[in-house]
Image (tube, rainbow, N blue to C red; front, top):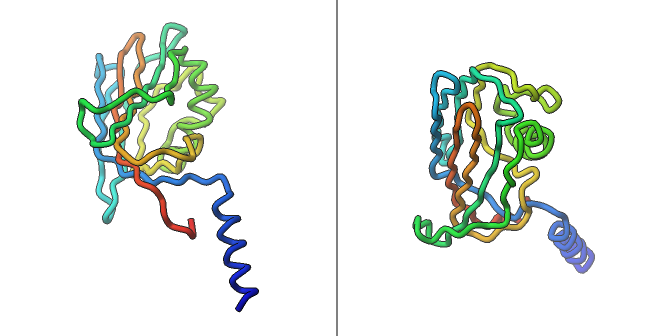
Length: 183
């Protein structure tokens, strides 16, 4: 009995010391807008999948990005979910060219989280960005490249692109602590 208790304690300490995401999220809303639907049409929606929600997005991409196309993202948190309570977080993506974005954030975060549920181009085939119809179907981000520890609350992420076409996504999610000891 004493040996089994030691193994359980050792397993628990090992499990707690591993760098693993300590949160789960529930998407609450996703919105999109574009300045020119003939060049970039966006349709974004939440889908119910059992008791959970997933995100689906259709992008009809009909324009070429260039050195004037800029990308930036902002993250906000609110304890209550009230619009007036959101405060800016340090987890932002500074304004940068689309090419730099595809070499960094796209490769390290976006593609790692959405490749399994989309037909997005693989890193290395993203600049110039191919004109195509992109489908993200019933996506659930796995958290790769995101902070491992985050306080509970409501999070708003605003992803903005400016240039020939101005467009953005706004995602609001509720984060809760992952208390499952088995991961």
